[in-house]
Length: 377
Image 1 (spheres, rainbow, N blue to C red):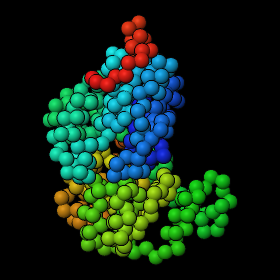
Image 2 (cartoon, rainbow, N blue to C red):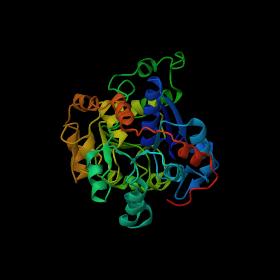
Image 3 (cartoon, helix red, strand yellow):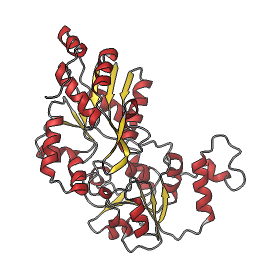
Image 4 (cartoon, rainbow, N blue to C red):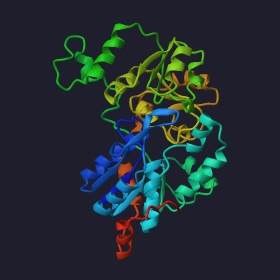
């Protein structure tokens, strides 16, 4: 099957959307499908307002039309609501092509956190965007319920996965031989070795409470960093709020952006993974931490409620300090066992099953080879 994926989120961005797409793409290709990903790197881009690390494609219609005409996909999936996603939606509607979409981000809540714009306005835009989709793929049931309450009744559950080989509680080969010659093995990851050397060279006061992910206002990091907790607070990640938060909370250890090899090491060293976000749809980092044997402390909101729930792999409490301290008592085998129920193979299988097959007609071909720009729905 020829599958075209249109997304405004792609490498070098590091987030759950890109991670999910990469994992699904790899497994679809392994199964023999031909996958074409249309991403911002193929276009002239401008920085996203308030988040310059994210690049937005400028007027992508020409390239998108050409990709549809030449690749002739048998299924189209639209990942995001940005310029590329919007352009593909308009083109697909114009040509009468069925398509699926995904809801990865609590966009109305994020916009409200950054700009103060009421949720009802952006929720109406999202309802317009996703309503023609044959299936809106959503990561958790609680988010499906939220979207249904906002008028979207075409949502389906698309669960996520975790790489259990990469993220595990076992001592890594690198850490075992690090003390004598880390550069002798070609498989060593430089950032992983550097992180381990840094941790081994410093005195760590236990317990360690860790957050990993984007450092941005919508992640509600102040709720974690302002807690009075024993031991240390560690932050792994980067984003537009890092500079201000690092200045406000200098007592925390700031590790910056880490690749998966280094991140796997920091999960192993942490005692509790603290997730203060109130607006995430899922939170892949929750799975990564649990797969590494690290219990979770979070608020009882969408995302943690679905990923952790009543599994015993973490503590969900509106008092985040109580959650963090209580999570210290959890046996580290329990979060590992719970995380093992989430696989990327199942995620890719669900994705493929939801796709809407395209049957081409002469009229569809004429639409795709025309020159009229689809400026309105």
